[in-house]
Length: 176
Image (cartoon, rainbow, N blue to C red):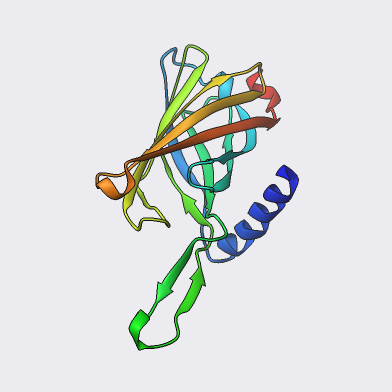
């Protein structure tokens, strides 16, 4: 199942790359001044049982840098559709909601933990602006697992959350 989700996410990322979408640089603030724990190429997924959405996470950090290049792609649940047209005037055209790239605002690193915030985005279910915070803990040298919480200002979408996990795919030898 996870392999199929990754394949679907990669398939959805290819058209984005063709349209000029590029990975976003994200500043990293480290309490110790070192970002060595994050050096390398990381990949993983997130999911929310509350919203039914999943997505992919990737980020790369070169040694001696304080900026990572990150991708987070939200894949809406299959039943998410947008209604186009007036329901009283005849047939309704439904358009599927496509995968959406999200941007990470910043990452904080300290005490074997990581946290951060995504740039606000429009939630495909409520159509409202949502802010997401995340936190996680290193589980060994090559895995980070954590949770996230998404909130909107309006009462129509109070709060939802889920879990995420990334694994280091490749470590740069100059950092170790």
